[in-house]
Image (tube, rainbow, N blue to C red):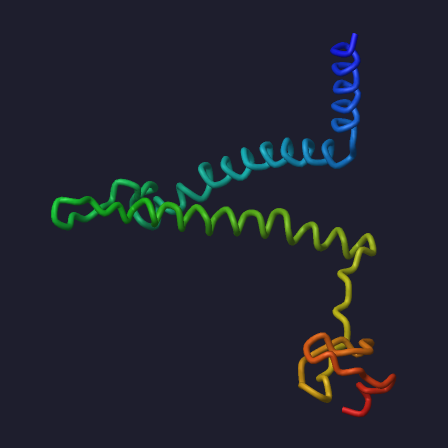
Amino acid sequence: MGVVDGIGSTVKEFRSFILKANAIDLAIGVAIGVAFTAVVTAIVKGFFTPLIAAFFGRSNFSTLYFTVNGSHILYGLVINAIFTLLIVGLVLFFLVVKPMAVMKRRNGYEAPVDPEMAACPACLTSINVGASRCPACTESLAADWSSAS
């Protein structure tokens, strides 16, 4: 009977783990990420790769190499990786980051404001003006230390 109880408690523990919001959010994020990867890949292959081919005469640089002492140095793979990185970065920036920033601004989600900083009078380290002790030199600071600077 102890084995059955052990299995039952393990199943309950697994169910508790799966139903946690973090696990579900992660699963949804991965699924959306996979779908979004397919969209970005289609945009790169269907739009940007033909543009590169129009400008450079070829859309795939992976076959470019030079030989040193019988070894093939495949610099074309590096060129392909750099183009892919730049294109994916541009697509993500203009199709995701910029529109999300506009949506956040419209819906009132502003970025947190950076705290006001001032130099510690003892060591000149830049610290938050609301601090009562410097984290660098541990100098105890007066209540109005930042206005004295």
